[in-house]
Length: 508
Image 1 (tube, helix red, strand yellow):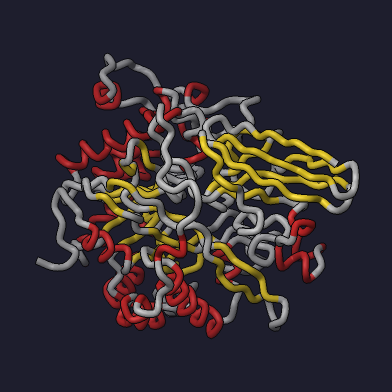
Image 2 (cartoon, helix red, strand yellow):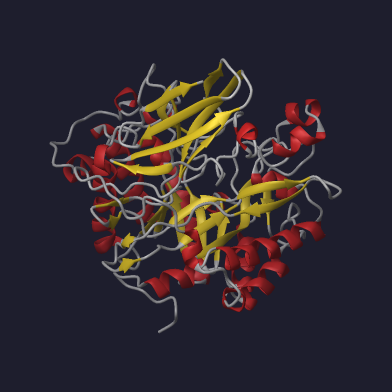
């Protein structure tokens, strides 16, 4: 048997075999260069195709979408049966993508309901107007949404997918107390896969550092985009990576206690380059605006070839040294959004050729890195315990949900307490766990003025809250005002993780 063999069960060493050879291959099942993509997969030794299938906003009828996913999956598996394809179920739904789909009888049956002759009800799936979320944000606590997630997941399993990325899971579970609804859907898909998946097993990740209930992780591993720090003393738009949090532990879906589950980093995308920021902000302000005025993959794609190769090598080594449980999903194929006039619509790692005229020519570097392997640099890694934070292994006694180990106050107030402005990962403004699901931080503001703040869980921007926006949000927006009326005001802010309530008290 090969190192990648599994059937019905996937021990950690097998999971890490796949994660150590992972790439982000967004929508590769729809690729117009699939033959060349498969050549790259075989040449480099890729074994895990992250984000291989899924929709954010559909551009094909569902029947055609799943037909093409299956055809591409079959072709990839014919070339290498060991490869895992990951499908995505995201935190976004659109009325026109949902309401034309008739609900199959098997969906009703799976949920113990009598089949009905009807289509999915979009309004019964989303949080709805006035909820404080995106208009298209699904609410997984709703039965209709659970059926939608199961419908998509079962179809992807039938297409040959053996992994799922569940997006920004902390957003659409805002009303799912104890994660019972999302836990149910994930378990239903696991049960279906145990009978019908290619190797009777599917694995799950999401943008999360931990999703543990009653000591058990709902996910097989955790995944997050990387965090950066811009460099202003080097020519060009350079940056370095910054460690944030760690992967939480718990009993894995395999039934084994893990001090820390595996963790997968990636270069994320969310819209390409911000042309307004690039045209209107100063050099210093642009440096802090996302990744130099763009998302992660567009920044990477806009570097020259030598710099891209160097940054891939740097990211690989940085991951091995800074997170003993971490791996990096190298970009194979990723959407670039609006990255500039004449720019390619996708980053593709393939060497540029007639078969892939839009290639960025990184395949030889990836082959070299995979042949080197993580262990050479793990020998130099920082101890894993350096990543431990407060509130460790503490759970809500009612729901069993494990509290985050790191919670950070961030906003424009931060420079006045010695931190970088709007740094959601700052150790300086990290909140102390004070018991009962509550976190607190006190500080002195030396100058009166109008500032703002929000709370980030796990020190990331994937699940934040503020007094004016208590529903979880993603990104740097929705911060709440922090009005300091007098110099040298003492401020104490307390955050309740269970309720998202935030208490602000001041004395002067």
